Image 1 (cartoon, one colour):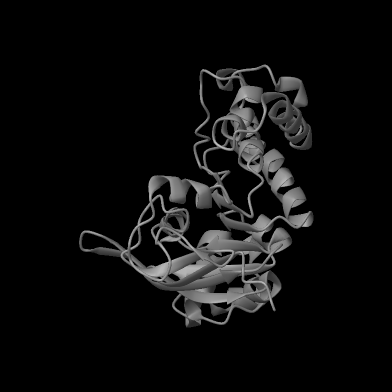
Image 2 (cartoon, rainbow, N blue to C red; image 1 turned 90 degrees about the vertical axis):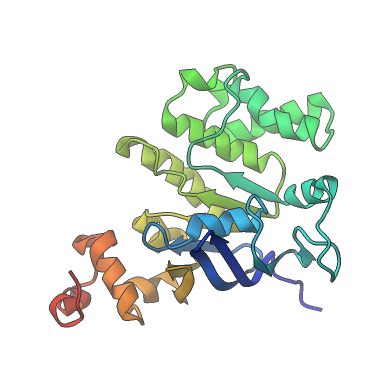
Length: 272
């Protein structure tokens, strides 16, 4: 039998008051695939990530992690207990936009915390694992530093190491470079490219078009809470299939990132 996707989202909807943020989103992500979610601000990308991890409870639809439904018991509608939800969330790593590190813990302690306190891994084993992960993200020499002593790029790399410490099946990134100074973006993207190349299953919300073009296996373009277009990055960036995707590329990716064949559509296609 074929293994189920690492992530399967079907018919997901979410509203905040009268504002419909997700409008019937369906998406599947296979083992080892890197999927970049692109779209203008307010298109629902970050809300989708939070619903996948059940940080926000969707109004309808379903999320499955490796074939197991998130947030709901069995085939019914009874919500999972906190313990059941915590167990399933351990399969998902989440890298936040604003780092979310514990300020009173050292870098090493931040990375060790969840394996020790959630997975009950013996402290010596958790420390060895954390040190290996910090080596992987280029921060072994900073293991005894505290978050206040780190640059933004270093904090985000600690955040990635912390997410990896739980050995997740799926890694979610919510605009991981948007809070960084431009000169620090590259060091975080380099770690993410290495993870993609190593076959980590990732869903990445990003405005970094170069990363999406180079590292993604698939691009999913969202607008107004819907999936408008999906496909390989070379197709999306070179031959977008919808007018809305062409508008996005012209407005948000910058003309230097858009093929000359699209630049001529600016006047005819209603691009501003």
